[in-house]
Image (tube, rainbow, N blue to C red; front, side, top):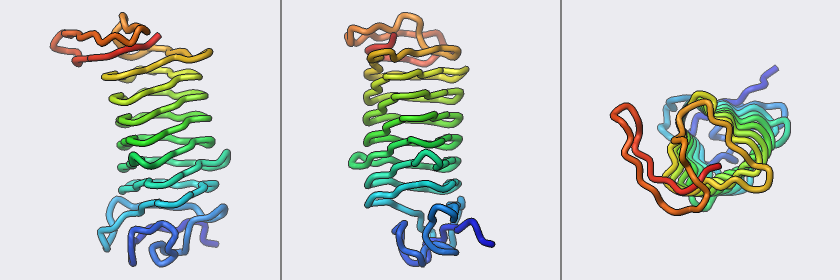
Length: 205
């Protein structure tokens, strides 16, 4: 029994075109795989609403220009490049792991557990209402609203804009974040040692 369909981009970049998949459009019992290379050279893009209640593994490129909702039983493993564009929203209510590169220019709304082992670049709004674990590299040039827990578990969190802890939100740092980050949103420039990274930031608790 076939339980995985692989992206080939045979006809276009449209996710919902069955001709772009080896065994049809991914669904509840049909998991999705995006390879690092395709014969057509095309990779998928979502412009509508996509609900993921299956396992999606991306080793190639994947772009969201619509609304992606990762359901409670959905799994999204990004080992390639995933771009959440300016007009797009990604809602994670399932299990999301990044070991590749994730670029958020739109809205990323985390309601469950998000783990970043790769590179995460937030240029838009990252809203956390549960748990984010960061053993990787995270750069923020947008806004992070934290209502839950951000655990910087041995990773690097570079903040060039605003990280705001709201309600019971907190940040647990076991990696590298400057000790004197503050909450008054006034910009402060640091000149770290040669082994550190230059930060220009506003807030963190």
